[in-house]
Amino acid sequence: MRASTESRTRILTGRIASQKIPPRKIGTKTSKVMSMPDSARSSSTAATDITPAHGISPEDQSPHHVAENSLVLITGMSGGGRQSAANVLEEMGWYVADNLPPELIMRMVELSFSPDSPIERLAIVTDVRSRDFAGSLGDVLSSLEEDGRRPIIIFLDADDETLIKRFDTVRRKHPLQGTDTLHMGIAREREVLEDIRDQADIVIDTTNFSVHDLRREIERCFDALDSNVQHVTIQSFGFKHGIPRDADIVLDVRFLPNPYWVPHLREFRGTDHEVADYVLSHENVDRFINSFVDMFNVMQEGYKQEGKSFTTVAIGCTGGHHRSVAVAEEIARRLRAQGDDVTVTHRDFDRD
Image 1 (cartoon, rainbow, N blue to C red):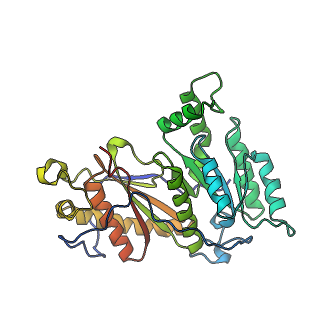
Image 2: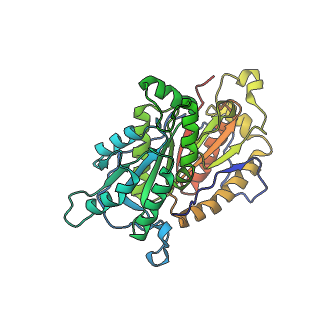
């Protein structure tokens, strides 16, 4: 089975590091908030050969460094949005094989990429139908690698409350529910899918997504894949609303003074220069941000070697209005200044 290269890292404090990108000038305006990442429709041409991982010469690649942009595996939690994701890819020109059990995936891949096949890009949707799903899918992934192919794995997720609401809306029974509660079925599915989720190239948390949001996110992801660059998403959030499920790295900036308790700043947000100036003028901010950027650059080199194209950094404060927003914008500014491809989102910007 392909080795997992993603680690969920939580960083609570920073250490002193040398300053490379100059700090933001206090008093200047920051960019406006984006409720969703910018996106662009994928314009990739079909490719049936194996695409080398970024920054690695073909002779230095091991099998888990190889990503194939013409083969996608869509999986994830029931109710997470697999079907919606499949519809997006179909509209983008992919041939979509839906509800394919693991034991038929190898045969489908062989037929689709045979010399006389008209299929150029194949997306396979597979879901949990039994408790041995993960083992069966793991065997398929191992067989694909032995055959010289590594699919891009997209994992669709959402929090339990959202999944329950979606099941209630369609009045459907969870595939692993049995005679138990819906909540227990979801818990079983999370356990079964844990290893597959860890192996995923792209994890999309659809908890707060509309169908249109999901479309934009998928298009953005494939646009980044086609451009052959590593993409970084910086997302602010409020701890009181929960940690983002798709975060690779979590930063806690609640050690900074809270503008909420300053009456004339309470109604502003971290994108307003009044709040940004207040947060970023704290004596520890530069040390914290410099330490993170230095560490992140080291991590990105490792991610590049492992063929990981997407990294999500979640930055949290209490409500997701002030400190996390200001720090997220500043980290994004510094990463862009060194040439990184960065998208900024503020998940809880408009929540109470």
